[in-house]
Amino acid sequence: MTVRPVSKSDEEAFLGREIESDEESGSQLLGSSLAATAAAAAMDSVSAVNVRFFTKLYVLTQLLGVLSVVLIGVWIAQFHKGFAWQSNPAVEFNWHPLLMVLGLVFLYANGALMFRGFRTERKMKLKLLHAGFQAAALIVSSVGLKAVFDSHNLKDPPAPNMYSLHSWIGLSAVILFCCQWVMGLVTFLIPGLRSSLRAAYLPVHRFFGLAIFVTALAAALTGLTEKALWSLSSSYSSFVPEGILINVIGLTLIIFGGFVVYLAANPQFQRRTSEEEILLTDTVME
Amino acid sequence: MTVRPVSKSDEEAFLGREIESDEESGSQLLGSSLAATAAAAAMDSVSAVNVRFFTKLYVLTQLLGVLSVVLIGVWIAQFHKGFAWQSNPAVEFNWHPLLMVLGLVFLYANGALMFRGFRTERKMKLKLLHAGFQAAALIVSSVGLKAVFDSHNLKDPPAPNMYSLHSWIGLSAVILFCCQWVMGLVTFLIPGLRSSLRAAYLPVHRFFGLAIFVTALAAALTGLTEKALWSLSSSYSSFVPEGILINVIGLTLIIFGGFVVYLAANPQFQRRTSEEEILLTDTVME
Image (cartoon, rainbow over all chains, first blue to last red; front, side, top):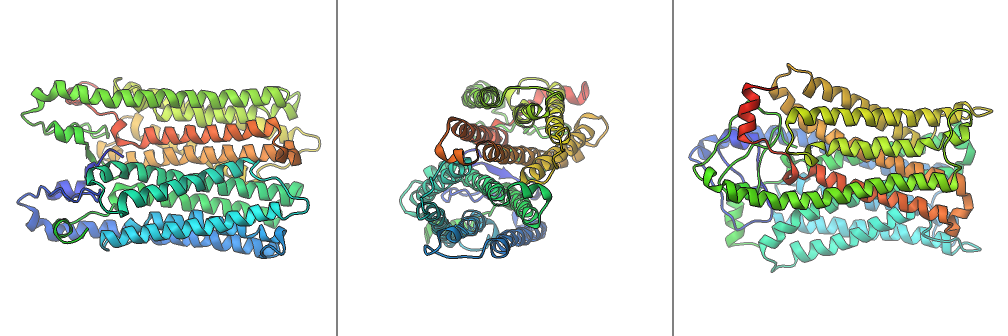
């Protein structure tokens, strides 16, 4: 999280070659020792181990993410009469947990991991995919917010909004996410900003990206707790199936979140720009 | 989170001098360029900026931590009849939120930041302080657990334990914390383990250290939500003072957590072992 750290992993040190970490500093060329060419084959094999390890974790993470969303669908379908829109505000509520977890947790995480999961793609394509996934995450979770506000406002008599800790945490996460998305667009996608400014903002964008994700998870967990207490009341303490399902959803979300943060924060999984790409992008693209 | 990364910050690159990041690899000596001696004074002034920035954030973090604990004390004293022990199990419960936040959040965070806040101390002293703070955190939170189990078991009739998502998250955090403490003791404090193994385990210890902390915060937030819903029921939605206080405690904990993770995870705040210390510790100490 330093400003543009040139992180020098063991494998690079061992190979006597520095590869620039993918930190928006496209204009800087690399020190490349005499051993570089000779070591290229060896390096590919060392990287391959990291990539295989990454791929296993990445697939496991995706499975956990899909599992979270599916379990929420099962929970709603099994115990809460499925889905409706404004004709039935009480059932319209049910979109809220599904869409918030789909948008603010699952799609958001996939957007965040874009630069890790598709490291061989061109940087500009990855930026567009990242921004696109996060836009989808924002739209899906906005519909999820609409569902909960509707379910309060269209009730007879209307129920108050925004009084609970869950609502404060969740709305903070969504507002921060909007700011983060706009800042990312202005800084990294709209052309013209100096690459030193981009490099200075990148660690801030990364930190808040993960902070918003963890805050969204906190909102999910407090939301599950609210729903369990309102719906189950004292039967929650009798280990009824819905209660256990809610707890399992919560733990699945936490484990999913742990993997996502691990994959996103671990420098060994960072995309690295090759010398060739830097030369190319400096003269041809971006 | 690579194995023993030699993180090379801008200031060090600028000064043409590498300082080993404090990563348990005491046996490795440092490349030190000819410019090192000449640059020493300049370096001190660059580091001083980082240290001043760190100190400001660190003080702010401590204030937020103290504020969280004080607010919980105020909440209990004002709205829940203060504190008692087994003679009054319902009031004994009140120790639970206070001691869990004091132990698993505030003391734990202080233990985690030990190597950041007191960077000029000798490494062995810091290790003992770190282990000591985390032992205190574990003891305080164990008493906090005792309080909640007593409040259920000594009730007439007894209430069930461990049915809620909050309890599953919280107990997971405490069990992981116990494992983490024992692993830390065996790996870093008991002499004899090869320094390559210590170096390999350090990023794992760091990752789980922060993961346990964030899980403890999730437990705190779901716990606050439970207590708000059980105690306030439908009056929560009328923005009663206790409800707002609970929400403010929750947000304070989240902001505190954000600062702690930022200070702990940011490589620019890592303690760095000086060449002199490495020479000394290799020959004299540890």
